[in-house]
Image 1 (cartoon, helix red, strand yellow):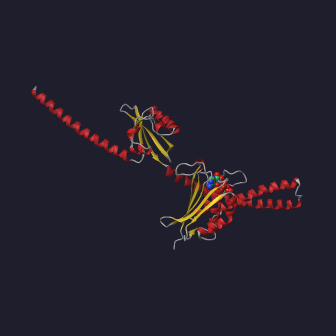
Image 2: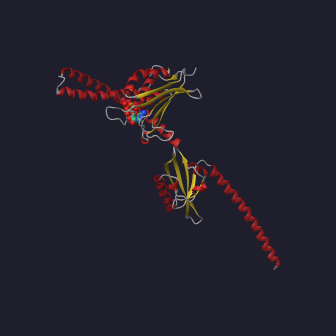
Image 3: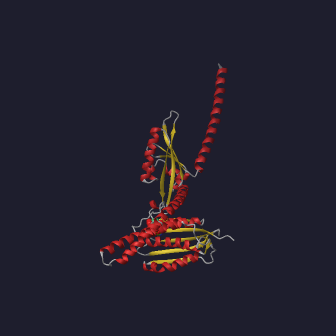
Length: 384
Ligand SMILES: Nc1ncnc2c1ncn2[C@@H]1O[C@H](COP(=O)(O)OP(=O)(O)OP(=O)(O)O)[C@@H](O)[C@H]1O
Ligand SMILES: [Mg+2]
């Protein structure tokens, strides 16, 4: 009897030790996972079926300007915009019902930051297989998406170039003939006659086609620069001589800041002038009621590149157009005012010389981002 009691106590103690060792092990695991989740620079959180936070890592809380304990129990809509929270909630409800993961992208804004998140919503099940909560792990894919878009754009532009060259050549000759004969007929007509007016209309539209074709050819032909290197300040000054008057007439104040003694950059002088002129024309078109045009050139901190900035305080480019502005024929201008080739030609020229052209724009004044558009051209320096 006593022996049996001792035996039970002994068994009990062994079990107790085992449990305590396992609890310690579990705790170690839990701490390891917690520190993994805590140190991750991803958004990690769990929510219940009504979309309230059950837990969230420090990174998520810090992004929204708080600490995890501040947000636990709060609905998604307190952190995300109404639209994003509603979309997330419908995904979460779906995951609760179906028990399977769902992936989706969201645009999230806090203050001046706007990031694109790729989020995976996963069911967190108990031992019976019922979904207890939904775990969301979301990555910031803003930069990789930008890069992807840029690559797609570059490829699109390259194939457009080949196509454009073919089409433009085919159209150029008949167009020349149409315009030539129109000219002849115009000479033979009475200036006030109806026929004269009709011919003038043909000439007007013919000339518009000619402008499109010339731009297309320039776009396709950016292999034909005469020189390999140029003084970028010289090309800016040359253009300024041409446009100064029309800027004045349009109440556009020019603020030029050209860094002296810049090394030569890779690029043909005339083609670079074409790029700067395109950017100035666009800037001027966005400041119909006047404004300020900043143009600067400088060498970058590593002394490897020359950076040219063309900035305006015009109406800006709406975010939904930002992906399209370098596309051939993308224009928001009315017919006859723009062909939509200026930026694609400029992009073609700059990238041909291994440079880069990027754009940032705001349609409203918000904090440190004033309304207007900034184009940045980065050019390679001539190596000795
Ligand atoms: N500085 C700017 N401010 C506001 N919008 C701009 C600016 N630069 C470009 N855009 C937008 O990008 C579009 C495309 O520009 P792009 O220069 O390629 O063609 P375009 O100016 O419309 O025509 P084109 O240059 O062939 O006469 C413009 O129609 C305009 O909507
Ligand atoms: Mg333009």
